[in-house]
Image 1 (tube, rainbow, N blue to C red):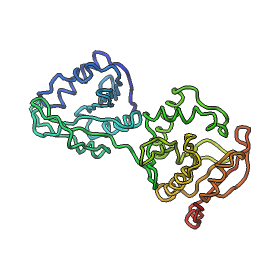
Image 2: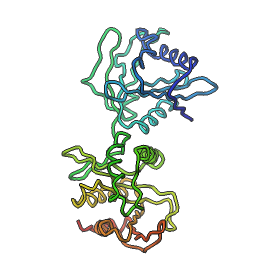
Image 3: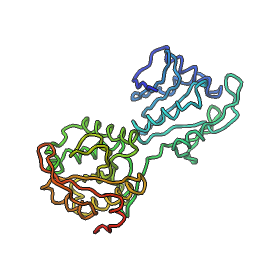
Amino acid sequence: MEILKAKNIDENQFQQINDLWNEEYPINLKNRFGLLLEGVSNYNHYLIEENNQILAWAVDFEKDNETRFSIIVNKKHQRKGLGSLLIDRLKKDLGEFYGWVIDHNNDIKENGEFYQTPISFYRNNGFEVLIDERIDSEIIKAVKIKSKIKVFSETERFILREILPTDVDKLFELDSDPEVHRYLGNSPVTGKDQIIDVINFIRQQYVDNGIGRWAIIDKKTNDFIGWTGLKFVTDLTNNHKNYYDLGYRLIKKYWGQGIATETALASLNYAFDKLNADEVYAMADCENDSSNKILNKIGLSFIETFDFDGIKHNWYKIDKTEYKNKKPNR
């Protein structure tokens, strides 16, 4: 079902959301929807509509130096997956964000029904309940929740997590460096808008394919090192398509520390143990000695040389049986 993302809503939409708000929340919160965004300048509405009727709504907004959200599903359309659909979209667009959930049951709603907390819904959708952070007043009793950042794998030194919209500055540092792009077509990015497009592309891959490149985060310093991981390639490359591609890219100051090797091995483990892939491919510019050495070191076999965008590249492959039988030279 289509989700409309909009900066603004019209008067009719505002009134519909206000009515949904009053129907959903306890009576002591009646007509407080408009206060949610009071003093907030940066926000987005997400609407699921049918015949000009709002079936479900969500909003993200910046407040107190964090990204927050609110969500309401029309009572007639609850338990039909619309709430989870909106949550998935927010995760794709935002990465990490917070909300407040009323956690006291049996407050009276406008229609005389008792309010039932949706905390279980949020837990089922991958949120962490921050038990120690509460609001407890006459008007509202609520607990704070936080979207969980997905960690795909770990190594001895690094956490390999999803790439987030907040990684834009570090990814720009990485991809604006001409030396990083020496064997990548010599086309470093020139603006952060290009990086935002890359992040959106990767996060859409998480949704479409369940996999995409991962951020490499130093466990000791929490520094962003670069990226590693798998991409499911649907374009034709060297007469192959619909295959898993292994890749990595590091900020220059982290070169030569074995990071690409360590994280690429974790990526192969994930490919064969978690994704149950039959094979993984990789390629490297023939003149990129470092990358070719890494691919050989972790157990991939050279297959052939081919032309990629006018540049000679080496083509590598490893299948599940080879990976299980080989002990990569670390």
